[in-house]
Image 1 (tube, chains in turn orange, cyan):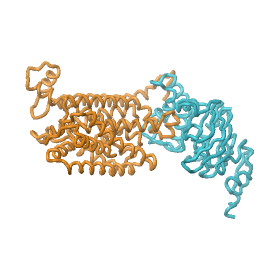
Image 2: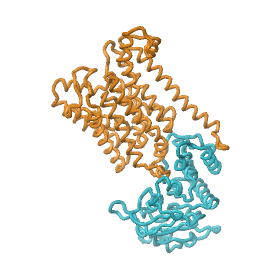
Image 3: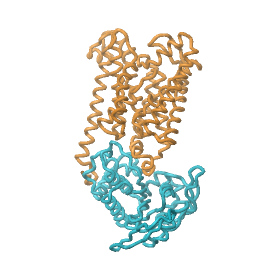
Length: 356
Length: 256
């Protein structure tokens, strides 16, 4: 394989083309899944009608109300949340050089959940109700997010510190994640113990991560923050690739390793915090999506990151569709299905070996 | 002179590792840092390109103090091959291309590709270009790491025990290659090493570390059995076989 005159060789082009085709196919699948998600539910709406309604060309007021007020925000929230969690997992796995790292396995998701619950209950930044879809209505997203972010960052800093002094072996990271996750779950349980009936019901419903509870206002906030973070991750893929070669090699290549690692953990924690603050704990997307992508196109972050974003969105959206349809007319929280998918993958990784 | 170190000292928390270290390196020379385990060879190498920051002392690369340089500027002047090669599911080509990281601002240019291509040809790595790092042998990985360092196009190459996990053929291939590149490009290489015989065969200059500081430095053929005994505590004899010096241990002084 040669690069005469600085031109890419045909073999390398073909190798890159395979990765690009995979990303393109996942993108097409995601578009189709978005239309399917809007189409399916307690009221079935045909594909043509979905497209006509989205183009504001529908005759049915009922369809317009269902799509614009319920299904579209729910669908887009699933896409954004899936993308944010998957990219957070991919970036944590890279900067900690740990294939089992993800917001959920490291306890960051539980810390963010505790922070958000603390803000809503103690600081009064949200209104709780005892129903599944309106369990929590966040009136002050900035304070709620700040609280969730604060506790998730505390966890991220502890993880980063432990990885520095003890090495970031998968065993140490996961055990630390279990300890920290348990600590914050205990904190959340303490809040629940002192909650009244309505607050208790709301917190329990809220811990069932569910994309249905986000409205347009939530979605705009969620997507604004997440989009900025995704762009940040994509802009740093070359640094993450260098860090995949080891810290010393990365430093030798001019990468400010400590700064890149800390800022990546901060950004991933922020993405996790904003997602969990609005839709509750969604487990395993951050672990499963990057691993599926790694199996297909490898660890090159230039392709891994965009592909993980799309696959994460696709998985969460698919899980949400199943959650909506499996026990019609009842709608189940999507986190149940992401756990059904994620837990076996996690066990598979442990059994088969998790060499990155 | 390509590198000058003045009165360098480094300690990990309260543990003093290096003190009063001063030496210089010339172009076209391969220098080997020798000494017993834990004496600070790797620490010294890491100080030279700011992976570790010495508490005192100055390191001048082409008369520029690296304390005043950004990490990316340092990476344009000094390349580093770590002792342990981490693997990932990325191709050898992409791993070698990472060597252009300090030079690439936004996008890989045709010039970057030409430089990578030249090094791949020189190291005869064409057949490995599309192979994933996690499928490679130790020798192949080491060659890729050296290729990445060469693609950085620096005047100073630092190598931490480049042959520690290699078989005899790969050892001779890689050290021969480094020596050839150093002479051919008129750059300099500094490497840490345990094997005295390999050092005697492939280096131009030596630097012995003992008791946290430099015990001796000079031309490689000036190494004497007395020096080796003083540094390692092992009685040795240096004999010549077909013109090459060979160190033969006679007895362990401490055990005796």
